[in-house]
Structures are given as C-alpha cells and as structure tokens.
Image 1: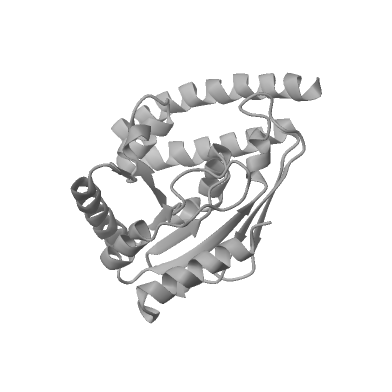
Image 2: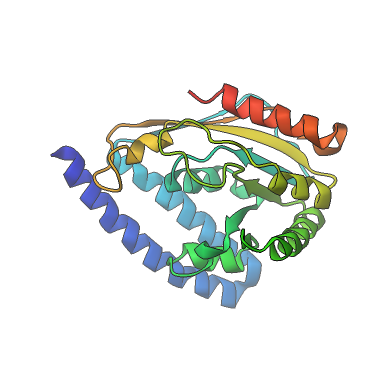
Length: 240
C-alpha cells in the first residue's frame, strides 16, 4: 500500500519536473547558449535524482580514485534502469557528461529529448552503421576539443534483473579512436534495477543504489582489445 502511494506521488512530481525543465532548458538555451542550457540540465538532473528519496531510495557514490582533470574522459558503465542516469549526471556535472544514445530517444520525451538534441550528446541509428560512424566521429572530436566527458553503456539496453549483459565493443572502440587523449573510467552500478522489480508501477521502496567509480585508464596506454577486456571485467566483477 505504501509503495502504491509513494509511487503515485513520485510520478506526479517526476512528470511535472520533466515539463517544467523542458521549458527552462528552452529558455536557457535560447537566452544563454550552452552555459544557460547546462545550468538548467544540471538542476534538472539533480532534482530528478533527489525525487528518488520520495521512494525511500538510498544513493551512494563510491570513488576511491581521483578523476583526471583537464583531459577528455570516457565513462563506461553497466545500465540497470532509466533512473540511474540522473544521479550519475548530477554527480558528474562538473565534467560536462554527454551521452551516447539511440536515435529513438531524440524525440517524444519532454526534457530528455531536448537535452539529447541540444546538450552535446550523440544520437546514433543502430540500424545505420554509416550514420553511427559519422555521428560518433563528430561527437569524439567535440569531446576531445573541449575536454568533456562521454558516457556510454556498452550493454545497449538495460538489465532488468541486474545481471550484466554482453558488452558490445564497437562504441567504445570508436570513441577511443576519435578521443585519443581520453582516460577511460569504468563504473559499476548496483541495485538500481530493483526500483522497477515489479514493473513501472509500483516502485520498490527503500532500494540502496551504489555507483562505484574505478581507477582511470589512459586509453592509449594499451591495445584496445586489452583495454576493453579490462574495463568489462572491472565493471562486472563489482556488480552484485
């Protein structure tokens, strides 16, 4: 009963925030350009992350290693829920995180689609290899030039039971090629899938989510095959 009540309250606030921040992003982008838009997006992501506390959710970030500064970064993570993106974006906001997303997300979702189209992220058509290659090449050049952070989920889709799916190498391979001076940072997300254990409604109450950041790896310090294996093993070995 409590889960149904709290989930209803969460959805009311969540939906209202998406509509409100869609307008705020538009104002920020048109009046303040990149800086104005980013301020709106950062506020949105942190607000949506804090809304999870309505459900009694506990969010913990574990970062035992320093994150390199003034260099482009590539964060590689497992993916368990749509609700692991906002807390991650809020925590990484000073690194200007940009996402590698499927093209379908670029329209139809208030705030989310607008941010993906105007915030510097890349939308790829997985059915069109040529479009994907061109888009990621431009995206990589953008990340390299500005020392921003790219975020990629190599599983492709969310894991509904927490067990990591097979990691696809192509996305990360192209990013390391077009962002040659990047440092790759593996992230292990735990328990976020439990929020939707019963589906989209109601949410699970009192879930303890952790985001564990592992040691940064200089992309050019080893062959890609070795880098990919190390990143995948590091992430999966810390997923409960």
